[in-house]
Image (cartoon, rainbow, N blue to C red):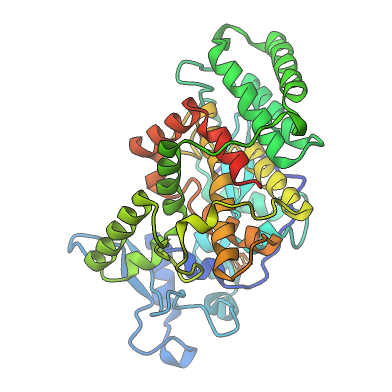
Amino acid sequence: MSTLSLNLPTIQNWSCHSCGGCCRQHLIELTEEERQRIIEQNWTEADGIPADQPVMVKMSRMPWSKTYRLGHQPDGACVFLDDEGLCRIHAKFGEAAKPWPCRIYPFAFHPAGKTLTVSLRYSCPSVVSNLGQAVSKQGKSLKEMTRAVVPDGVEKIPAPKVSPRGTVEWNDFHQFIDALDQTFAGNATFTVKLLQALYWLNVLENAHFGLVNGSRLTELLSIITEAARADLTEDQLTIEQPRKAGRLQFRMLAAQYARKDTLVDLESGVSGRIKLLKAAFRFARGKGTIPPLQEAFKEIEFASLERPFGGLTDEADEIFTRYFRVKIRGIHFCGRAYYDLPMIEGFRSLALIYPSIMWLSRWLAAGDGRDELTTDDISQAITIADHYHAYSPAFGQMSFRRRVKLLAQTGDLQRLCLWYSQ
Ligand code: SF4
């Protein structure tokens, strides 16, 4: 039971608007206590539970499996989701009777030394649209959550490494977080700020900063972030198409974001996997039509997404800036929150979500017969992609990490950010 104080995002609002999205996207694993509570709640068809629909099922088909999750209806919705988009457990027994994962979403709590830092999942449309109460005013309920779910001793977790050899104390790690956040708080467009951040992180990585700490680190960060701001401005950027090999790696990455994991798991396992393998082959070829991996996407030509789509609206620019600042301040891109990756590597992985979201947004717009992006396309694409950020095991695998490294080393990471920003 953690009593650490919370570091809340000050630029984010959120209240639930009962869209039911999270009740369709997530498989909710239950503790034994939660399973017993649901048994005691004695759910029947009279409560609106669909006929022949178990309210809980085993996580795995293996006979020895003892872990349970909430059941889902044939359309993928949680068995407790009613026709109005409300939770039946919440309606009948109150919020406290729901399993903890349902109560916590879309919040995420991460170790930050003597505090816990709070991030949000942008798979929730209300988070993307910044709707509801200021998160900074929700400290009391968030504190209750952390007391219940965050174990003792998190303050002993060391700060994430900055690079594979760059171990730092929390005080210095927070300096990097502040510098990244300040880069995104600047006045340039989101794409320029992202390229500035990548630029100064590259300089740091090559500078073997390991011996620099405390006030010398403050000075170093001030110099290189200032240099990035001066060297990288809108009119100095040249848009180039990413190399062929980079485009292939990128399509495989975008495919990871475009698929729907929960429904495939719910579908027949083998046929679902064969479908995914065939789709992976088509993504690798990058020719012909893109296999629509979920219902939001239509079958259109790969080539049709490679022309300019009008770039970011001011609103979309604000959403991306807020999205990155919340993930940065919430340390939701490295360390314990992101497969134990060092900060620079984790940030490159986060950076790649930008061209991925822009590519998915183009797919949504082109599928609708439009040749310009709207803020709605981008918002929807963020909810699709962020569902996986830090939660899909695929993103922590070596094959994925090699892909990110290759794209960074060849300069294709920057080219992709620019190419799909237009
Ligand atoms: S996705 Fe967000 S707004 Fe929709 S039901 Fe879940 S928490 Fe509420």
